[in-house]
Length: 221
Image (cartoon, rainbow, N blue to C red; front, side, top):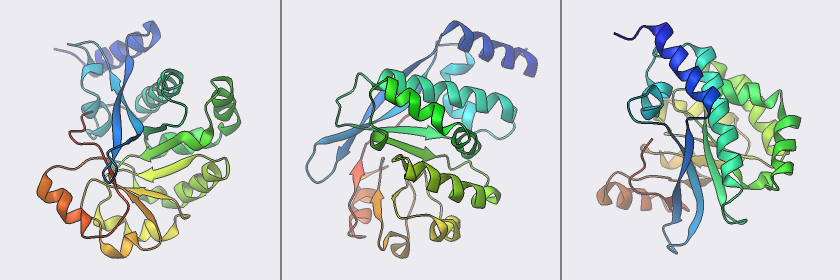
């Protein structure tokens, strides 16, 4: 039976040996049918911890926060390095933990330097802040989101639950994204991006909000 130390050791070994990759799922404009960008998704070898990224990032207590941070940053670096091969006008949607976003903001010069080296316009990057983020860090998140937006990087909230309404009021104008029900009040004055929809009925309900929407059906992580 695998112990927590075995799990962590296996993840670090896979990262060190480069046994992980990035897959890209197209984000399609639901009005025109045109692909506007791609969402990056972690992929790892079967029968290893990296084969189940949903559990790694979303299951509370499964990994220590320090390990999740290291894994998240490896995924981000892989996404931008691989994403340089995407069309130059395509947006690059990257999932990110709230804690990673705060950490990355302290190293923003290094990250934008990497984008420059890869010839990726910062405006093509859309960080999707994970729904697992502890909203007790809202103040730090808002401050960091402002810094990222000043650098030209876009930020979205992933899988928006209704209870984060106070958080959205504090955010600078920008992209808001969600997989759950979005109250009409939250869409006022903002561009709403839907990157996945669970059914045609769900999607039709979202159209009633009269928001600009982009979608990617069948999202998998």
